Image (cartoon, rainbow, N blue to C red; front, top):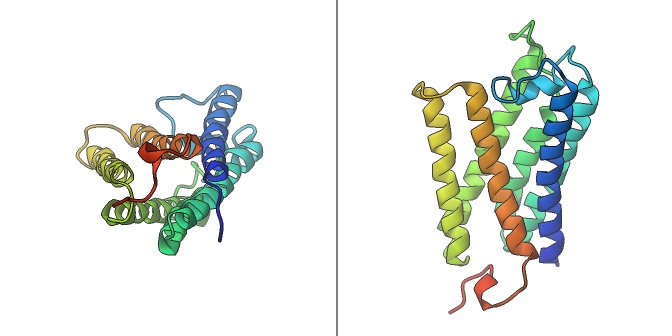
Length: 202
């Protein structure tokens, strides 16, 4: 499967843009949404204004782009398992369009909303781990994956230790995931030269 790295980079960057625009636009349209204190999923929660559009654009749209990006990036690095693991995060994000119900947090829909994103995030972390130990990849790719994994674990640990709230954890995880995606995408869009190789050269 022949994959053009610039196409992969464009799709990855587009996913970041769609996610950010979705949060900003629908966050501004929802006057009850607080950008620091509310869960991001509130934008698509049952009963919220513009919930359908927020789910379709912010979650499904971004999720589909991440599925394609993860799948193609894995093939670009000649690793089918990596392609599957990274794309599963996009699947999880797309299925968070299942609207949570803040009035009934124990409902099937609310639980499904949480489960799919947790499974997707776990798959993405496994994908980063696979990137980090693959000695065939360029060192900068491995280092970026390992550092990102550490940041993600620290962000989740901070919540477990009571250092910050879950909504803040959401922001941190969001920033880490899309930060890695953005940096990786810009790398793919850059000019191919000896300093911008994806695989180790001997």
